[in-house]
Amino acid sequence: MRAAVDEVAPDEHLIRSARAGDMTAFALLVQRHQASLRATAIAVLGYTDDADDAVQDALLIAMQRLPDLRDVNGFGPWAKAIVRNNCRAQLRARRAVPVPDPEPLLPPDPGPRPEDRLERAVHRDWVREAMAGLSAPVREVMLLRYFSGVSSYREIGQICGILPETVGSRLRDGRRVLAKRLQETADQVRTDVRADTAASVWHRESTQILGAMTDGTFGRVLDDWYHPDASIVVMGFLHGRRTLLLDMLDLTFSADVKVRLHNTVASKDVLLWEADFLNPPSDPEHCPPTMAALFTLDQGRVSRMGITYGTHHPADRTADR
Image (tube, rainbow, N blue to C red; front, top):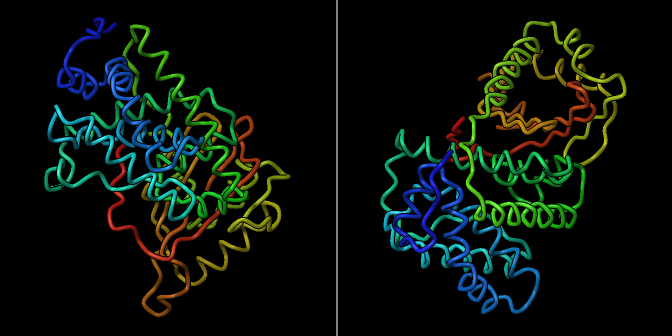
């Protein structure tokens, strides 16, 4: 069990504790700066729910990117810059999106260091633990938004089969629950968050399932892993039942296309795959560059599968598991 955090400790001490995985320290940091962050959002968006959403979204981004903050005494200006960028994005596109951190306070990016990976993993574990209490529809959009490359409202809507406006409302619900959970964290001494071993298990099993797709035994996987009435949604449209997958796989692999899984994210009864299509030189445009598949599970079997395709490879998809 962690030692109690000093509520009057300077930002520098709270940031160092939060980087070590103490979410009580981060919660106290949020309490200290929340009023000024909200004032920043109100100055741009006015007294609207969007202002609170921009702050909550920015705090989740800040929590995940805390290891990147060079100046440990500069949390306030750094977080305000994220809030402002979120607000401007809302004004441009009527939605808040994750944005790059403000350049003046960040060092040149040499790639994540091992200690940075560990710190980010600790923060992600806390978010995963808090997300476990959300309903499945809300957890799906939160998982996509903060743990995958499928993060725009349009992409999330396609893979979940819902309107972008519904994505926004579910994200608001999820952020408010996490904000409340973070507030509760500030008032208690937390035990260490255990690593999410389920994620590594799902990654291994997902790799095996993809292997079955290429060696011709996916029909057996289909019977074992999918409910008989499982639905398949492609790019936001309901396309049919599970047998549709056999036709899709045949079209893909008969053309000698390979699939490379590069990320899996699991949260309770929701599983996400992100993968690349490797087209043969003879047919380089056969499949889009990337795909993401969102599985909704019921008692360990797929009840719904949503699929979306990407038109380009992300510049940096480094996934910390």
